[in-house]
Image 1: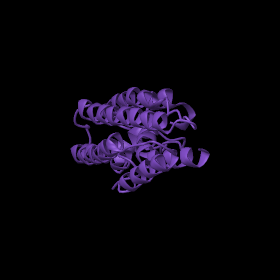
Image 2 (image 1 turned 120 degrees about the horizontal axis):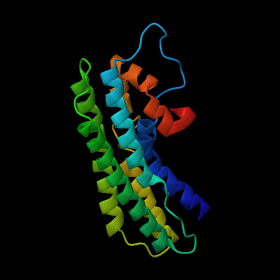
Image 3 (image 1 turned 30 degrees about the vertical axis):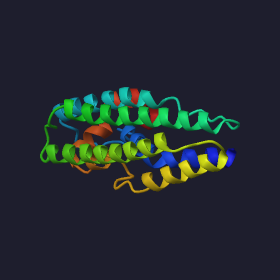
Image 4 (image 1 turned 30 degrees about the horizontal axis):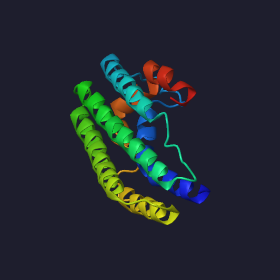
Length: 190
């Protein structure tokens, strides 16, 4: 079962990478001492990081594997994928609800980030639908479900996550780096 558990975990890694990378709002690198983020951009980034923290809380409990019960493991995986789907919706909503970033090309960055979240959610939904309908009666059938999930999830177009698009904007990147909210929410890794 350890091998199966590892494969199940691997199947969710490509999707949770988006969540993890979005969570890494700031950076430990100091901001350019001669230049600081616009206060309005900082306020926008603070809203995004707060929303991501709320959404990420839904993923605080990874699926529990039951080595002797493949059906129970499948049920746990389905529950986790449902939570992941809801978290992705919350993250996209949080970014949209923060409004248009008050920086040049800010809406474009938001559109790219939310599109990435939508594509990721679509892959999660596909995987969830297949997993829910797959019969699991023993370890071999569970391994097939895991392999199918891995195949579906590996097709993610943006494994780096939506933060890539937000941070590609120089003004937003500076705000993410300086955001006190991101640092507070995510500690030393923010």
